[in-house]
Structures are given as C-alpha cells and as structure tokens.
Length: 252
Length: 361
Image 1: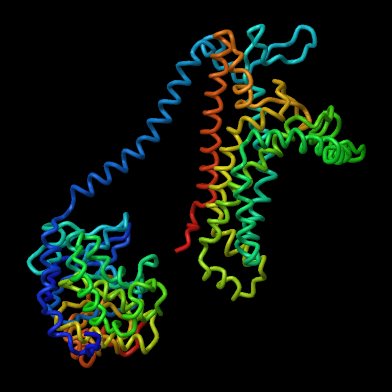
Image 2 (image 1 turned 90 degrees about the vertical axis):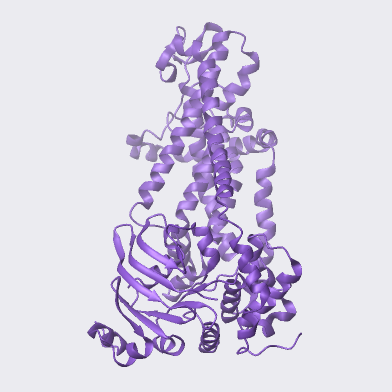
C-alpha cells in the first residue's frame, strides 16, 4: 500500500541554476497526483528529488526535507534503499535490451537477490497483468527481448518492472508523452486502476491527462509551486492568475 | 490460470500475501553500503595499479640510466660531436664512448608522423565506407580483413617490407617523388620551403630502406587499430543525427560531414592517439627497414634509426656499462616522448572541444 509524501522547504540546483525554490507540498497516500507546468519549470526535477535520482547528476544539489511515510529520505536512509521503495517510470521506455520480457520485469527483484522461482513466476504474471500487458506477451515471455516490443508495450513493461518490487510510491515522468493515443489511454487506465494501491505522482504536459487520472494537481512555474489543489479546483476555478492563464492557454 | 484477469480486477491481486513478502524481503536487505564500498575500493585499486606500474617502470629506467645521465646530463638529448675525419656530426659511437640520442628521437618522430599522414586518411575513409556505404555482404569480410592486419606479428611485417615493400618503394614509388621534388622549376619556385632539391624531402641516395619505408610499414600496422576504433565511434552516432542532416537536404557526403564525422571527432582523435602510441613504440618492423644508422637528414629517403629499434639492435651487444646505460636512457626518452605526445594530443582534443560539447545524447 502507498504512503503519503511530505515535502518541506525543498530547493534544488543544477550547477548554478536554481531549479526548485522552496517547494512545500503534501502528496496524499493512495491517490494520483499530477504535476503540470511549462517545459523547464522544474516538475521533472521535483519528482527526481522524491527518489534521490536528482543527485545522480554530479553537478546537482538538494536542500530541504522529503518524508515518504515516516522516513526522511535525505537523512534516515540510503538512496539505494529509498529507490527500492519508490518506483519510477521514465519519459522514454527504457527496457534492458539484452534481457527477455520476463527478466526485465523481475530484474528489480533478481538484482536484490530474490531467487524463489515459483514466486518470481507469480510476481511477473501479476505485474504484467497489473500493467495490462500479460495477454499480449504471455506466450513469449522468455523468448522475446524487452526491446522487441512496441513503444507502448515497452512502456507498460517498464511499469510492470516498477510494480514488481511492490513500491510504496510510483513516480511517472511524462510516461505517455512518447506514445500514441491508444497506448496513452491504456497507460491512463492503468494509472486509474493502480492509484488505489499506490501513491502515484505523474508529471505531464497533457492537461486532459492530468484531469482524467489525478485527484490532486500542482502547477509549477519557474521552479516554484504556484498552486496545489484538487484537480477539479485547479481546472475549473484556480486561485492564482498564472495557473488560469496556463490552463486556458493564454500563457506568455 | 491462463484466463486473463480484466484490467479492473486489481484490488484483490495487489493485496495478496506474496506482494508483502516481496516488500518484507526488500526491507530486510539493508543498505548494502559495505558492498558498495568494497566494490569502489576494488575499482580504485585497479585504477591505482596503473599509476603504480607507470611509476615502477619510470623509477627503474631512471635508476638504470644513472651512469649515462651523470656523464652527459641534458646534453644527451641534443648534443653531438664532430667527426674529426668527415667533419659530419657524430651522435652515437659506442666504440669511442659517444652517446647522444637526438637521431633516435628524430627517427621515431618522423617515422610516426609519416605513418599518421598515410594511415589516418586511409583509416577514416575505411571507417566511413564500412559504417555508411558498405553493402551488407561486404561489411563483415572487410572488417575481418582489417582486423586481421592487426593480428600479423610485426616481424612478419618486417620481412614483407624487406622483400616486397622496399623494392617497390625503391623502383616505383620513390622515383616518382624524386622526379617531382627535384624538378628544376619546382625546385626554384619552392626553394624557400627547403623541401625541394637534392637536400630536400626526397634528396640523396634512393636505397629503399630508410625513414619513408619505416613510415609506410608503420602506417600499415596502425591502420587497423585506427580504423576499427573509428568505425566503433561512428556506428555509435545515433541514426536520428543522420536523419536530421538528410532531412535538411544534405547529400550523403554532407550528411557524413556534419552528422557523423563531427559527432565522432573526439573518438577519431582518440583512436589516432592510440595508433600514434603504437607507432612510437613499434620496434621490430622498424628495425628491419629503417637502415639503422644514427644520423639526421631531412630526406625521407635517408637511413635513420628510432629509439625502439636502437634498443632492440644494440642491447644484446652492449658490452660497456655506459653503452647499456645510454640505451636505457634512450628507453626513458621514448617513455617521455610518448607521454609528451599523448599530453599534446589531449591538449588538442581539449582545445577542439572546448565550449561546445560534442557528445550525442
């Protein structure tokens, strides 16, 4: 089951660029939260701060606190451990091309030393079913490479890969932006299904997508969180003028 | 079991016991920080081993070359005596205890330079052909034969050079260059370059053996390494870059120039540096064709000597301590020249790539 995320005074830099400024945010457990905003506003950096991927870039720096459940991820726990609890799906599908579909899905478990064959089989099937991919791939699970699937299938396989380690939080950085409308709607259905069991944070450029899948929406602009509220409120009656301008396309 | 569950039917699945078993298993695993530390420690050790090996070699060369260093000092690298009979410079005369290393340094640098001038265009052209325009059926045989060139032992190259390359140079190729470089009008026109005429690049006696022959054989030897690495770098350039250029209306050559060569240039320079390293240190084939005479002439037809070849030729016969020590100092010089050349090449890469990153994402 998912846990809530509490962000306090979060600041992030890339070199001298101050990418995130004083972010304060409470992301509720077992709901989907969408982050919207123009390119370069810091929303991707923000999700990357939630599993400490931001600091994998040598020139990146972070201050402030992020609590996932009861854990302060920047003090109580190592980045490796937090990433075992927080799954991530990237903008472009990134299957391991040398591994079969089966090995791709259970790679997170295998690298952690999970060796029970029977249980691995079960977990792979359950994860692929959860990602709505099982029926399409079950006949060549171990025959086909993960990279031989179509883009949409690859992305669903990456979601299955993230789900296989049973994360408490699932971060999705524009998971459908490289996909066609059919695959996109499959991914959206998926998010809709998954959000009752996982805390989902989804970055998106597509406002309809945010409106369709998320209960809460945050609007980022120039490294600041301008407004954070229920999706309904953000899209029908935003408090801030800038949010309204962005939503209605009158921006800039 | 094979019946697909509807996508909506997830609530029961996720709450299954094995899922929390996974979570429990992962939580029990700890941070594995010690394993990471051991791993990075081991990798650091591997990296430090390089420094240790280089330092040990340098220390050994330094200590063994002490006698010659004390006798000649820095003048070892530039000084010469004058032969009392012929009044020509005398650099190296083991019988009379004259040891100055300049002709070897000169020979090594000139033969390597000749080798690069021949091998780099050939290798880059070969790599472009292999990655961009080669028909599929020809690709693997051609790559195979290129790599085969690298597998031939250098003494075999030397033999081939003596029996095939040297006569070919002497009888067919050198006369052509001599005709150009000694052509009276050209000699007059380009007198200011000092490269034409009887004491120019192609002056003197045409024996076949000499700096040019050594340079050509080196070129053939470093060709495969440069070609193979350049090909790797070029095939790593993503296709989207090629498409970007083609979509702008670039011809095939223009596409190769702005999308492939430009993106691959750092890698190409890197492979040239590796080839150069091999050329500087190559011993056997050079010793067999360079002529082994410690002299310095501008002419590429003249005989010379290289640092590696003099060590190989004379070390077994070095009876005096001073001779032995001088040869080891030549080795030290070779070591330093290699480092210096590499440093310059790196500087060049840095100067070329400063400002704009050439990395393709």
